[in-house]
Image (tube, rainbow, N blue to C red; front, side, top):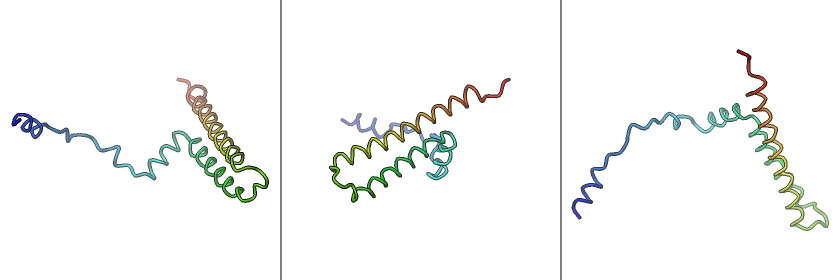
Length: 103
């Protein structure tokens, strides 16, 4: 019993962990990530815009059922995000394979 307590209290912790990844605040991290993958913020903004438009049009949907309206908005938002991801992959492939300077 006493040995387990002694072992638990004498376990060493690694305090030499580099905290360089924690030095970056959220704004600069978002800017850095946006430069690395520019279509990610485009996809996020498009998703937010379609959701906002869907909420705005929720009052004026006419005879359309609520479930049908929500399905249409979900499909539109997902389609925009998938399109942005596809364009982003094409852009990164272009940068990596075709736009590289020849040695």
